Image (tube, rainbow, N blue to C red; front, side, top):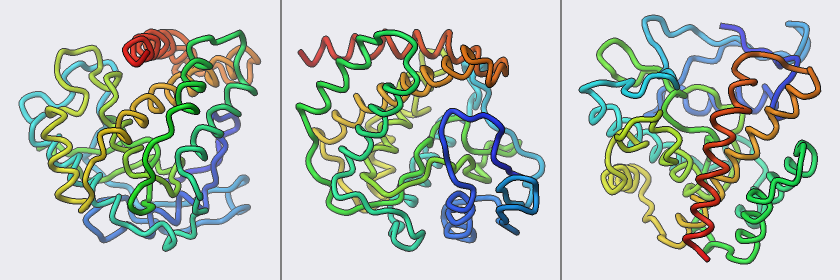
Length: 276
């Protein structure tokens, strides 16, 4: 499988960093495709080759019950693997080590809004102000953060065993609560009545703590859950900017400016109201 820099992207990322993440986790308790070769010019644009994992699929965002009766088993694997990711020292991947992970992420999404917003975006900016005024406790240690760990970004086989975690383009060093909050964001319930985490949140946290050796800080998780909704909204706003400029007219990008954008805008407004 060849992974190259796309011609147009929501988020500017580096293939070498993504390749390094695969190399760091291959053969570990975190299943990933085997990375084979990375080069900045051999493929016409920076890219790498990884070994295909046949017979697997990712959950569709249009399927409200992507794992059927095996949702419990998938959820247990999902949060156990996420806990294992949090155990890895980010220095081993040569990732930039932020002094304040919360500020690093907040500044990142603030810059995204400043660059890509097509209008006032009052809910997003209200979230930025709340997050700025209510910084979370510092993490006990910096962890590798996948950055987009959720249902749909791992491959399962026909027996619903997770065979590979994919889409490492947003990997960075930070607070492990970030991945946990994003994985449990209600958007990933895919419109169903089941938990977004495929298991109850208390159970998801229990599996994550057992695998990571970390203990969830309630105040930190609250902050990162607000940040997760801002992150989602900022990504969908970027999608709108790509479509508005005609840089990318992929139907998925167009869809992102509609349902996910509206969903996260409403969800974040409701969350902020509950925190007032």
